[in-house]
Length: 307
Ligand SMILES: Cc1cc2nc3c(=O)[nH]c(=O)nc-3n(C[C@H](O)[C@H](O)[C@H](O)COP(=O)(O)O)c2cc1C
Image 1 (spheres, rainbow, N blue to C red):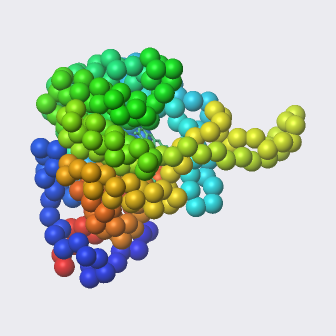
Image 2 (cartoon, helix red, strand yellow):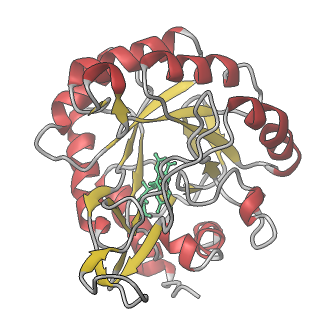
């Protein structure tokens, strides 16, 4: 259970719904992409409709099996994942996940996370899902390799990021929100380029690259330390991201007045307050909800508490 501070410990006084991305979010608490599937995965544990919303697992045109297991590893104070953007693909999402969300979302919003290997992958997903009423907005995962550019991440070059945002905006009226990595040096140029291309806001931040090693004691191994993830390196999430995420949100907020979804290491109400004070309008909770699925709904209840 999380510790809920008395309201006077916080400085956020307006506990109202939030109007952003052309929609009303009943509270600022979202589930972070990839950590709660399409909502169904956590529905037996929490009331998804109580949240501000869910950011779905990444959706690509074709199903993706993801990386070799093990795909997650805990380390002292944090977590490493290399899921490889495993997802059921666009057809299955439309046929299976959207109807479930329509029945179960209640007043919560659904933001769809999108991935691809080429521009057209993103455009295909955004075009098709954009026709669905259940979809409030798109979050573009731009931390994945662009095969047309030798595997360079879509978010690495501001002009590529801008082109991606522009092409997605051309095929939908819904909000297009690139998700930025916590690269403070280049973040201002990316924000400017994506804003000019039509971005409705920014998600800040995605995971940062990391590795963790452990000695394998299984019979037949050489006894050397090896990666604890099946595919080698991964993305760091959880408490180590809190300070980076806050810095990045403050930096993005200084560059733009567009709404920001603050992400990284959020667990306590005071973390939410810190992100809002840094400039976020909404926040998303990932690793803390993997450790305890009740955390996001408890944060939503804290938000609604009078006082
Ligand atoms: C297991 C796992 C899967 C994730 N999958 C995605 C994904 O599909 N798309 C994406 O943009 N981010 C993905 N992320 C990143 C999270 O959405 C979030 O940005 C990151 O974990 C930082 O938040 P946290 O510290 O609260 O976990 C994933 C993170 C984890 C731990």
